[in-house]
Image (tube, rainbow over the protein chains, first blue to last red):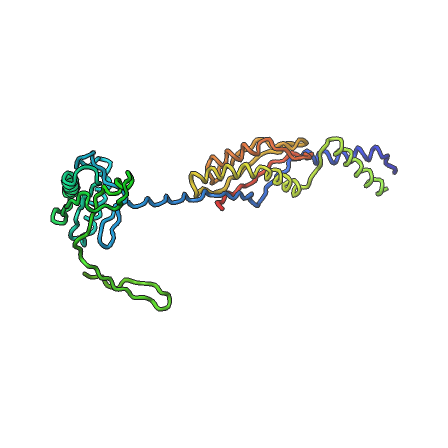
Length: 194
Length: 123
């Protein structure tokens, strides 16, 4: 039997087309992985420079205490600074006595400057005691214009000379004993005493 | 005679495919080609994931999507998210929006019903 080519074509198309019409089921076993990038943790805020620092013999302030012009009234802008001194004194009972020392510039008479420096030092002591520092730990003294930091005849020098200082006049001595690991050089406190 | 039958069968298949502008793939090839098409949208989906990670760095999970592939045009339609998905709804929506309307090129002579899984991992 001889089959015509046209018959064969039709036969083949008839076979293929139904197969093409069948719905395929596609089930991909392996997941499409999406890797995300979590945001980087925020950088820690830079530490604020300390306004107040305790050294061996003084409580050093890195900001000026501001007073009303020609008076001993402390401006509100300086309350934060003084509150920090209160915190330090309360947290450091080893500091037994602090001398609060007022200084002025050389504008005006010696007498009035002396009086103003004393009044300003006393005003600071009052503020600190009102905030809870024991009065027995504080004394006040005024030096007027006698102890300038800068003797230049400039506004900058005069601004530098108008100041209040906190000198530690009595404190407990603290002894700390450390043991040093000879291999690592690591230091470990083993004893703390007065 | 057998030679004639083979020759004409091949001719007929080729003619039918040429006339329709599409091909007839094996199931494996179909699965692979659809996956490749889906992966063209991975960048968009990764952006959605990164946005989610910005608010919650621990977000992860799977999204299982089902859809149809139209015959000849190869267009992806009827995208749906399977309830077994474990990733947040925002990611499911993102996938559905991204892949809906994609089209295989060339299309296939057969339509398909497909199931694919997306896995979200914080790198």
